[in-house]
Image (cartoon, rainbow, N blue to C red; front, side):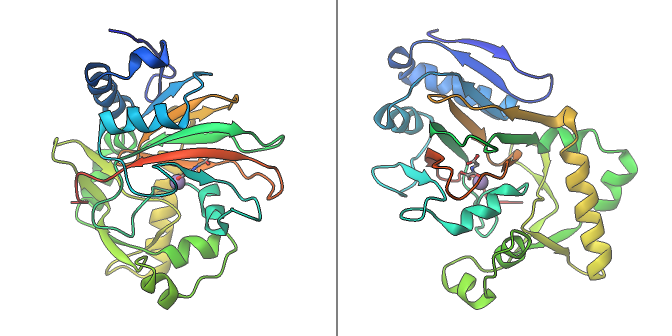
Length: 267
Ligand code: OGA
Ligand code: MN
């Protein structure tokens, strides 16, 4: 094995150390993939992955999604190339709840950091489900939630018309609140995009969603990454929530992201 691994917290996050070039084998990538699903987040501190190495590792761990240039999408609020919708990433979220099959995982490299803010946090939504009181599990087990990009953007202070969202393939979707994965493990499908609960009064559903997000993001389920340039992170989007600490639009922050296509539909 060409890597060494060290748990970062009890419930989420493992640091991976080793020489990048020797990591890029099917055997190591297969090992990392398993570890990712077990631990939610993998952290490669100051590993200095080039774009090409990042895409190579991604391709060995799954199927690279066609976004950005040659598999690398730039995460930045910079005026010229920035995407205003990224302001939604300042709130706890999962990626791709507007799809039936959400993206599996993302690899994110820190290229230019913000002087203030811009750290990234992850919360283990498998473990958060697991540790819920049994009566809560019984109460929420069959509930369905409407996920809305318009709702998440409005909380981020960005107004987005539902028809525009739908036309961009980002219309509302209904998912089970508790996702039973093919593995048999269960996780919570929540985040700033979770608008309301089907068949429940609006404010009651919103209060429940708020309560579950607060539960799942308690310190014991969270890993907070303080970035150095050259760090690379991978998160299992199907079993963690994540958010970026707010950073100024003109901070220059630039991250390179490679995303793996989803393999399992919400269920
Ligand atoms: C993302 C995301 C967080 C960050 O790329 O999906 O939420 O810290 N990024 O930039
Ligand atoms: Mn995100």
